[in-house]
Image (tube, rainbow, N blue to C red):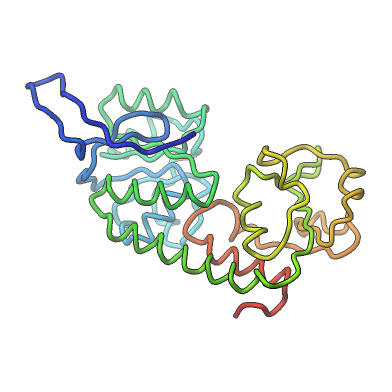
Amino acid sequence: MRWLLLLAVTACSGGHQASPRDLALDDFGDTVPVGLAARRIASLNPTTTELLFAMGDGGRLVGRTHWDTYPPEAAAVPDLGNGLRPNIESVLAAHPDLVLLYASADNRSTALKLHELGVATLSVKVDHIADFAREARLLGRVLGDSAAAATVVDSVQRTLDRVRAATAPLPHPTVFWVVWESPLMAVGGGSFLDELITIAGGTNIYGAMSAPSPVVSREDVMSHHPDVIFTSPAAAKEWTGRVLVPDTALIGHPSVRLGEAAVSLANLLHPGVLK
């Protein structure tokens, strides 16, 4: 379970007794200063890039990944390459005083190396809607901008609550969401997309599976007789029945547009339910 704790430590140098508010733990369990006056941030995680712009801190960015395409202003931020196993030399060349990473196993060695080099690093892994709120507040605390982070979280939550309230009394059609065609993979219960299906007024046929994207067979899908199939434009012709195409640019990861994504899906499942 990923968690957030305040850490009280005794610093090794100078005999300074750190207060519980000085440091927090990220999703790798590494310490990160709270209230860090970071002015040059390399965000190698689309979720944190979007969040920084939403908080009004996009001007602090000196680096992003290939995949950080929202908001449009992100295009003006230097592209440092991939977010997984990034090129550390390219990251250091941007002279960041804070690096934001996606906390996957692929990035563990990168985080350790940056810490070893004395670069403040915050690694977060957002897989569920609750993770977004938790990590947004953590980033706000680290940057000394808790109020801005709370404003973003509250705005997203209000929209999600509005969608949930609008769809709750409606019939919930069963949904099969294609993640990948070969092998055939579905949205499972371990994905935030499963949560969005529910909020939008649907029932994921693979919601009971704990994996975020389990491999399934076409025969098993058909045995569930899904009312709706979500897939990509290219694969839509491969399926019959009520085949719908979500806006993948909007729902690609759990970030500041989670509310908009829920509205979009709700209007696909229940046309006109939300304006």
